[in-house]
Structures are given as structure tokens and as C-alpha cells.
Length: 122
Image (cartoon, rainbow, N blue to C red; front, top):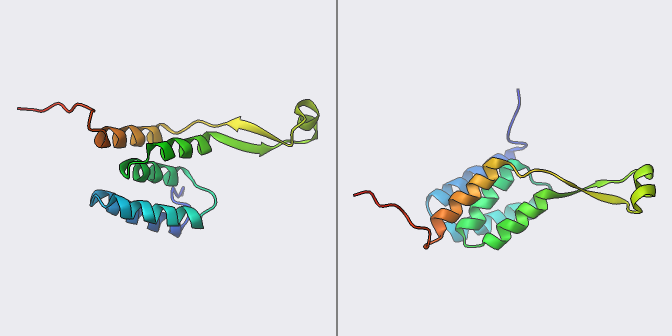
């Protein structure tokens, strides 16, 4: 059986952060997110998704873009044949940002941007 959540830590923080976002407690969610980031070295896609929402709703879209950039710019070790060709020990490889993470970011931006016109149904 495939488990989306890699650890109990990820599951616990995800539940807490989702609850804080639902209650519109964005400063507290940001504080919890920073604490989570400091204790976990490698983030998975579940972490990125919730992190994008927390940062966007807390008013830090610049940090969201930095977070997405950290997901995209992944460095892998370069073996001897690669080292001879490039002269570098590490080569940047590109990964794709999951559509679900981008969708969460766009949704959060649309809710936090006052200039995004909302269609009012009358």
C-alpha cells in the first residue's frame, strides 16, 4: 500500500496547519510552518503544498516563489564521466513542480489579492 505521508511528523503538522488555515490563523500557521521547516531537512510534495498555502495566506508570495525554486533546482552528484565533461562535482537537474502545488498557490493568491475581481452573484 502506498502511503502519501512519509512520517507521523508530516501527518501531524499537515493536520495542524490545515486547521489553522481553515480558522484564518495565518500568523500562527506561519509560526508553526517555520518550526516544521527547522526540524525537517527534506520536504516532500505534501509539505510543499501546505507550505505554499501557509506562506501565501500569510502574505509572503515571495517566499512561495523561493520555495518553488528550491523544489525545481535539485542538485545531483556528478560522477567521474560527468565531471570530465562539465568540470563540476554537482549538476543542476530540473524537476517539475506538481500541478497540485501550483494550483494551491494560485488559489491562495486569488483569495489574498484584493484586486482580483470576484464575480458577485445577485
